[in-house]
Amino acid sequence: MFIQTEQTPNPATLKFLPGKEVLGDSTANFSSAEAAAVSPLAAKLFEIDGVEGVFFGSDFISVTKGDGDWAELKPQILGTIMEHFTSGAPIMVESRAESAADGPADNEEDAEIIEQIKELLDTRVRPAVARDGGDIAYHGFDKGVVYLKMQGACSGCPSSVATLKHGIENLLRHYVPEVTEVRAV
Image (cartoon, rainbow, N blue to C red):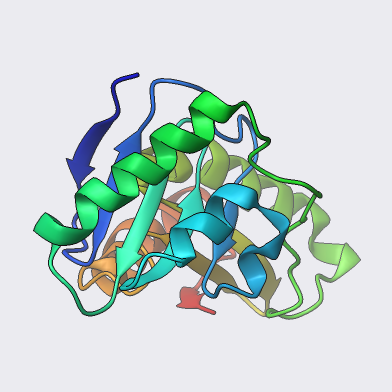
């Protein structure tokens, strides 16, 4: 098994491509070993000293480090990923749905606007941030403000604020005039 690695715009995060499907159409973001209990692979990755975050995308795994050097961490991470995939163990042992609890409750009167926002995020934004080892999750729309959560390599990335404000906000404002601002959750 050959696992490719790619750098991301976030210097603390590397993207690992095992050449196999990871989560298909869904994603999972783990920021602690406790949260990773639902995933045998994420739990094993958190056992590596220096790993502070794990994100599963459709066909990639992003790992965020705290202290530590990639030269030391990368071989350990590669070995853990390879061992997991060759064992045939599941990526997740139970389903975890991302919730929008961090944002405002959506107003039914805005259903059409929200649908437009979600479609633009799914078709134009998510593929771009996935190439960088991350994802973006919709967390609400209220009084012209769209609430989004950056995940994976995009979470904590130095350029994530610019991506939100100059990229995503401009895109949404262009196609959905009711959008006035984008805020990170």
